[in-house]
Image 1 (cartoon, rainbow, N blue to C red):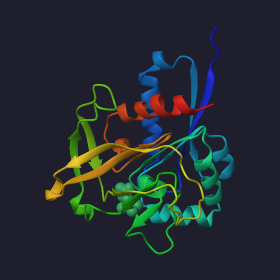
Image 2 (cartoon, helix red, strand yellow):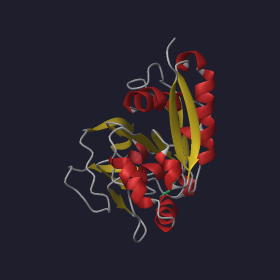
Image 3 (cartoon, rainbow, N blue to C red):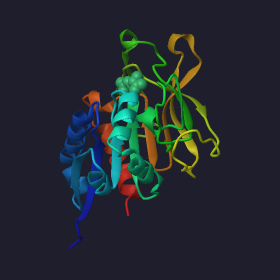
Length: 235
Ligand code: GLN
């Protein structure tokens, strides 16, 4: 009989849409029970170093990146997050504020806003404008998620990736340099006459999306993260 492998996925729960991620992972797993027979998943909320240390994988939700940075600093979780990011056996996904928190350089950040530096990218916060400029759009992700040509994306005061940085760039407190190449997964075309806006990237085991798959009533993105990141990179 094959042995069951225990896997813990943590959702950073300092602020923002962490409950939604927790729920979506649970649904993605129960809806695909047959596929995951050899695994026993544990989905936990992460607020402390001890909770973080249990995780094989971490998801940073949408919310407000400056508040997350502030709470992480105040609760002294920040250095542990830096260590987690630097551990090559961990997979990580940031959505919206989570993408901002994972970047190396933030345009329009608040004073002293920290970033974790896991993705060699510069992001522009609130790149589409204010809350009223939030929007929903079906996008074709079939180039990286098989058959997924109609994914309902939700953008809320979303960031865009404005630059791919070289590995040497370092402005944040984390000295880590992700050795994998930055892959652009998706560019939005012709939004407000702009050329192309990068809204999804991956750099090896780290994934970042400007939009919120945890709010869209579709679990395929969560399943993609489990299959292509959590299961591929965990020890
Ligand atoms: N604008 C927010 C920030 O800077 C992100 C918004 C979101 O996560 N929906 O963190």
